[in-house]
Length: 305
Ligand SMILES: [Zn+2]
Image (cartoon, rainbow, N blue to C red; front, side, top):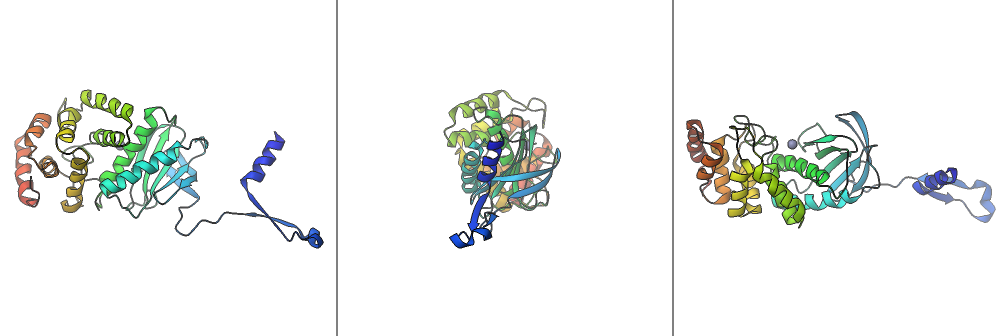
């Protein structure tokens, strides 16, 4: 045991011998040399104020696209996260133009079952696009950890895509948002899994999407079955999702939330088709929605179908 500990200690720090010429034996000095990061590298440690109090995180991986940190509860032998997070972020960066000059930071915590995200314009996680994931399991073969990662990535995308510089215009429930926390994310995750050939994960989401509903904006609203899935399948798949965020990033003001009419108008622009019938079937239609739609068509007349 002691031997092992010593071996570990020697392995962990790089040692350098200086002045080791024959006649200088007495001057032999052993100095640990700390590896110096190149300029612009993300910090080796990061102290954050998370759900479970202050956490001292250790950088376990970084490249030009991502920087990944583990807390003390994470098993350091878990490394699949490096490639998975990197590959997905590289895809999202291109498709949704998410601040291509900035890394995505990921802080992974070994206990819990919750997550959140932060953005480059928020001081919450030191002005970094960040996904924060707490999970009791980090088994690569269980969908949960990947679902958690991609769900939190959605929050970054919805808030920074195509130069958007505000907390997502659609997050939250009508009239203070459109898709709540979790109504848009499933189709976004489904698209990721399809892109990476993760057929089993995609199938699982598809099944779930066909049966799940929310009580917002009205009871029994089948967001995925009646809106996202058919629009995704009939109007360009990835392109209709990214096209929607492109229009929002380019035209929508940063200081307020989308209303229902604007949501339908911007999505119709992305689909190059009038999607009002889908909206009526999915959300029900009120005079307020109709008025919002008419106003949106006027205010954002540059968006055509
Ligand atoms: Zn969420």
